Every structure is written in C-alpha cells, then in structure tokens.
Image 1 (cartoon, rainbow, N blue to C red):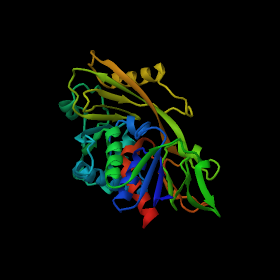
Image 2: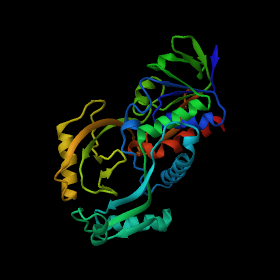
Image 3: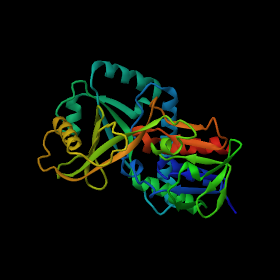
Image 4: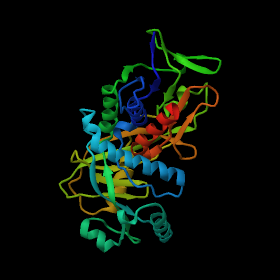
Length: 349
C-alpha cells in the first residue's frame, strides 16, 4: 500500500508551488491532475507580477513575500528544472484615473514600498518613452522593479522541479468520493488502483475547488471569466501599461497581449466577439497608431475569485487533514509561489 505525506489535487500555479516547496522539505508528495499543469488560468494568464497598490496589510505582505520568491525562482529554478519560466524585467506604467487615486497612491507608495522602485510621471514624460499613449490627465505611477513571466512555463517548471525532487504526478478526474475519511479525519484516497494513504490533502483546483468540496466545506470562490487577445504589430512597444482593469504588453513571444474582461458567467466556456470588441476598443482608445494590428489568438480562462477578494489558505474546520489554497483572482501567477509556500508551512510546520 502506497503512502504519501501530502496529496495535491490540481497542478496549477498554487498546486505546483505547493508541491515544489513541500518536496524541498523532503516530503513525499503525490500530485493528482485531471488535465495537465497550467490547463486553465495558470497556463493562459498574462503573467504580469504587478505591485500591490491596495490598502490591506495582510494581502500586501503576501504580495511582497511572493515577489521575493519569484526573484529566487528566477535565479535558481533552472538548476532544478529543464523548463525556463522566461522572466523578463521591464517598466510598468499604471495610468492614474483621478486626483483621488493619485493622492491614494502617493500614500501607498510612501508607506508600503521602497520609493526608489517607483516614480510618478506626467503625460509629457511618459510620451518620451511611449509616444503612442493618447492621454494621462493625472499621469502614471511607474514601477521600475516589475517582471513578467510565461505563466505556463512557470507552472510547469515548478511541477517539473518538484518531480525531480521526488514528487509523483498522475492524471485522474478526482472527486470528493475518492477521499477516504473516518471519524472526521482524512486518511487517504481510493482512485481505482487501491487505497493511497496520506494524512494530508490539499485542494488547489482554482474555482473548481468549490465544486469538488461542496459536500464537505463551503469554499468561498467563484469562477470569473477573463479573455485575452494576442496580436501582431511592427510598432515598438517595450513597456507594460495598465489602466482600470485593462492592460497591454508585448510579451517575449513577440505578440502584444491585451485584456481583460471580468465576466460572471459561471463555467461558460469559450471566447466571444463582444469581449474581443471590448478589449480592442479599450486599447485603441488608449493608444494611437497600431494600424497594422493583426489578431493571432483570443483566449478565455476562469480565475478563482474569493468572496472577500482575498486568497484562501486554510484547513477544513470539519475534517482534519483537508487543506485549501485558492482565491487569488487576477493575481494568481504572482501570488502562487507565496500561497504554495505558506500552505506547505501550514501543513508541515
């Protein structure tokens, strides 16, 4: 009878990070995945590691911790994995929408971040770096310590590294009925090849975590669909921009990635013309030029949004040994390593 210290359901960015940090502790880890690592949002996300500009201290601390982990991964992962996450450093221009936002951001930067990593620019200063930006009445906050990453490669590099460190991976369409529970304690799983023993199981299945565990615990997440357009252009576009809920950046694949929508449509799959028009109109109203823009791909994914818009990292209050890691929303790629490490520490420390 096989036995593991931890079974992980779902190998997106959080699950792969959890496997990575747990295997570095020499724990026996089994990853169970229905499809493949990075099948949904962890493999299709834009991969921008933008600074946290909110006011929640706990969330800010997780962002800071996770960004530092990304720097460590960038420097060391290729000694543990054959998959390159393709980190790249560039400037991020966050277009400021109002005087009130400007005042708030000035306070955020003064209190929460090293001011040397940020600068405020007016439109004239921005246009020296990006002349195609149409307007920025209140300027932009420019983050100089900003990275982007290939989300699919990052997720798979962490999974690959965990396997090289001793973790195991299998494909299986897991449901709650596969769990072996006795006296409110998790004891293992039965997935057809017999019982696999473990005292710990972590569900890192994005918004599907709520579906899998619906008979055991109410997980406060929902799917929020987001669509992205990838387009060709010969125009120079070296920096990354964000405005409102939208963004645009030229990735290492040579495409301009632009997005994104926030759609409450449950698990309704597929891309839509409405979303394409919305994204393109927002981009074209923000930038001039790009007359040669040629759409190459449109994608859609389901982000796990929490009710309080905060990541969920916890043990089940009802069944000992069941852990949950989900709810990072649009920040999944950035927060994934921090969430995985914190969940590993929660389980094994």
